[in-house]
Length: 337
Image 1: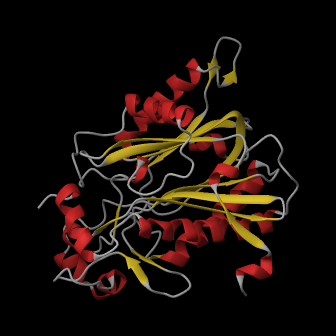
Image 2: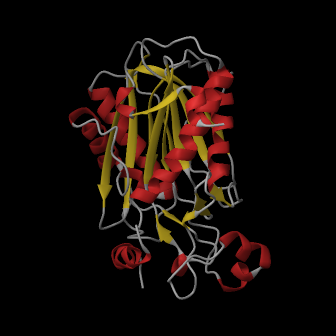
């Protein structure tokens, strides 16, 4: 069915109320972080697939947890080291008077997920307290809701790693948003997958593992199935994890948002092959934002969330190499050897 049949239209993340988005990047070290802030709080949930997540305060988002709102979601590089960026976000928001009132202090409630990018630039430089603080500062000063590409948490992202670093390709951060009637749903994603990236409509491979000559693509999924990757790849299953956020203006509770987050993984499955491996800590947050949330059917929100996420993943094509020649130039900057 054509998209027009749903009477949907593409919009910008800038059209969502009640949020700010900021980034901090270190292009030389090839790492960074991205923060989504909701000063008045946002109901949220998370669904984690794969075997290697690095995360902060995920338990807050469980339906049985007493906290109904959080104040920020941080996406970062640096693997588990990058969790320090969340402390920088907490420091900044405390200074702004944003947080859960305890009677003694306002405590910003911040959730976070990280990608592994330590092998791309400098392993000794990771998102830290200062970088988390700067990302929040960026959110207030510039509010970069439309920024995509080699920015923030996407600075060290790569794809197509079934045969190791020699065959992988630069990726980054993508976003997409859609509106149907009054309902708005958007997605922000850092694509750092073991697998390759495909256009879900044309089935064309748009990024991923390259062949031995470097002049075309090779099927990473087939390499894994045939056992070639295990024989020739170096440290295959360490440098992965695709992390994302789905936002909506629907009045949903944590249980409903958990369903939306779970469904949104279909957006990954439509575009990433293979997906959710034991080395991918693939995670998706779902959040209800803004002060004027509308009544909406959770299944309708989920359908739009899948649509937004699969298109957000594909947006990394515009900021990764437009050709294999450009990719070689990127390799000189981001990859060793």
